[in-house]
Length: 193
Image (cartoon, rainbow, N blue to C red; front, side, top):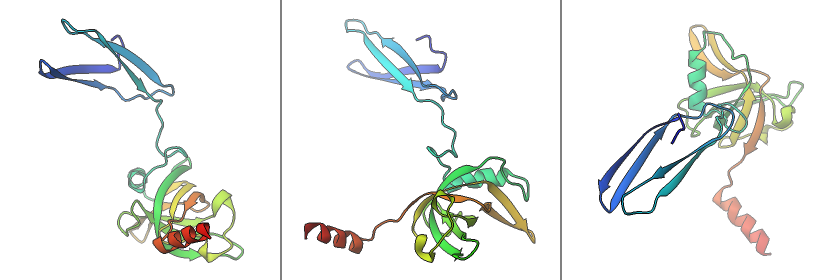
């Protein structure tokens, strides 16, 4: 092949079972790329292989949100008190709802993690509901909800305590509430009536 991004290929195995391994650089371009190469073997028909790499997608986008662990890496690299310049998307599971204001502010603060556990959490501070709307009911979010939040990451420090946050004025990009087994069974029963 003449594709410079294909770095190496090796073969191993016996005469009747050969394994070919190809290594290549990650695609850092905004366009997909393709390469073909031909495997030749004495007494056998040539085999043409195609390799296609999709375009690079940076993490933290709506299509590829940061996990909580990835967002924590970004936050930990910030200076104390600093906030990212750009808004990013972070996916997680709510493990604790700290407050929901249904009055004039209409915001909520809650903790998210990758698994819904209390380890490696980010505080979603004073965020809004879907489509940047105000919260109107306390049950609009709950522990166990799977969310994607859009906002700026912040390394909040007060009294020598660091709190990784998605800064105020963030909002829910998406929300999914897992269904309990009992609720699923009731739903199924309603469909058969």
